[in-house]
Length: 187
Image 1 (spheres, helix red, strand yellow):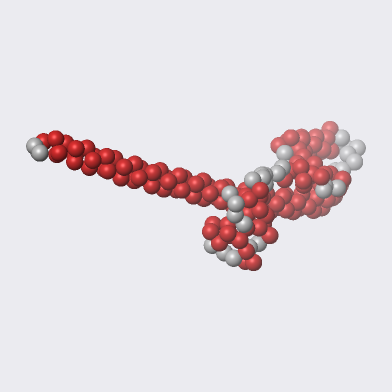
Image 2 (cartoon, one colour):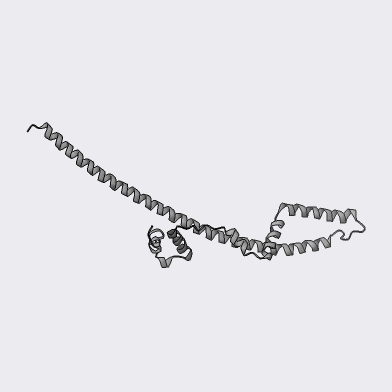
């Protein structure tokens, strides 16, 4: 495929090269060079994560799990039953459980922003994945169009070859017919 980016842009994307985005130019260049554009976006994102990012992701992963929810329910049951019935007189947090409310408020105050940070990073990862998917899909479409073009050229050359063979066969039939008609007519 001895083509240029300009020819590919005009033919397959129906645009001039100066109207292409950087991604489209890269995809066309990789098509010309016959190189892949697929990459592991998870590895690229993991490489740029800080300790705080990893910690926030871990907290969000744990805080959004059934293990955490069930464990926290067990903790609440132990706390309330321990302070309401078992320690009744010597309870360190008697019935409206003001200290428990304080602890729950602090957990919620800390956990909510951490989970939001993890969600923001996940949204950024999703944007990176979507951009990469676009590149891969565009390259696949271009490769499919190139294959169609090659098949069309092959089919056209076969049709031209068959037409030439039919013309040769017709010429041979004509010569055979002339020979046979000469043999039938006495001279």
